[in-house]
Amino acid sequence: MELPSHLKKYEIYSTEERLLEELVTHPAELVSFLIQIAEEKDWVETHREMIVKILEWVTDTNINRNFPDSFFSPLVVPIQKFLRDYIPRDLSLQTGENVYLVNSFLLSQHSAYFQRRINQECRGKSQRFLNVSEMPSYLLTMLDEYISTCELKDLWKTPPEELWKMIEDLSRWNFFFLIEKCEEILCRYIDRYTVRDVLVKAHVNSLQLLQDASIDFINLQETQYFLHKTPVEFLAFEFKSFHTSAIEIFDLLSPYITHLIFSKDLFNDLNFKIAVNKCPELVGLDLRDSQIFSDYLTDLPEQIRELGLSHCKWVNSQALKIVAKSCPRLKKLDLSSNDHIPPMMWGDLQYFKELAALNISRCFQIGDRELRIILQAAPGLFELDLTDCHKISPDGFFEIGVLSPDLSILNISRTLISDAGLIDLMTHCRYLYVLDLSRCVGISDKGVLEGIRARPSLKKIVLSGGIISTSGLEKIQTSFPYLNVVL
Image (cartoon, rainbow, N blue to C red; front, side, top):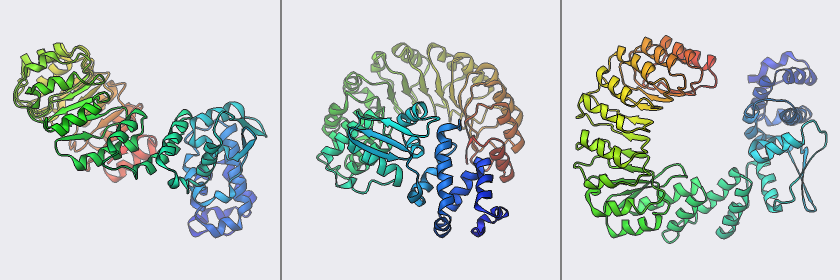
């Protein structure tokens, strides 16, 4: 049996039957083979019967065997793009008098709702049937077209008001992949007259793509305020000034704003107090680069959970105590770039009783003594950023595992940590799942590998800046294939 040159290794199997038998015995090899062969149009057409059998096997196995949900997911795009004519339609979906024949594997890969129902109602059955009478037939038509082709050719013709109705229907079934397609079309209708209303509707309906597009459009038009892109459940508004145009849109968005940012010293203006008390959903406040203390800090809303005080020269012991009293439920504090804070003042972190995330990056004065005080004053940290804290010695990092064993997210990029310190903290920080080691020149391939072995819960590691060799990277990827390595 002749195969394309890059698949010659499979020619040891003389017939289609032998090759198919080998592939289904080794499912990972089957996935690799199908991904590579899918683009070989002539070969696929010549061996269409074998391709159909492979797709039938994948479809049946997806239902009847307990493979991880992600095992066959790499096949979705190649099937939709190159093998759509060979897709077996094994599942009947009935709504009213209409019956739709679809592929259960592709459907389950696109919809958690259908994945659950297929597993519960179709496993072990030769005839697969689901009653979806409560679902509009036009949604099933869309669904069938998209899962088979990854396209919705005529969706662009749909008027905006109908697209919004579609999104409402699709949201009931959590068809996020189809919702995103509707969002893409709606983005084309954004203009200066509709953008504010679209932004509000996008935020209320959790439409990330449309919210981001609206924010981009607004930011191109305005200079008195700025909207920051955030996950769709948040809305971040920055006052550049208290100009009328900024106040006008702020009033419109205030019921939805979760984060407020004030440029320079705007928080000394009465409008600051008015603004923070006008946002019922407010959880975050950023006063970065402000130069002088404001008495308005004594009366902040108690619901504030996040506070940004980066590069604020007025931050001192008294100010921290005032903030801690005003924000008793503060969980996230940014004190980065405050290189004026003296050693003993770090002990005032003890007044933030619920503090869980602390950013002290670019506080160049922090050494071993300061780090110990910080970790003792804030024992409940799960996130810590020590970027550019050059004065912490290699030995100083041993304190982290002892005093903050519950850390989950740690950034120690551009520090002097050694192999021994890295392995120690990864051994003791039992919940660590994100670690940034960018430009940590004191560590080696061996130290990184041993550290990862000591912390199997790690999900993501950042190794940018040439700190890992090519061979070291290959060892990590081979030994820990599910670890997300960022270079």
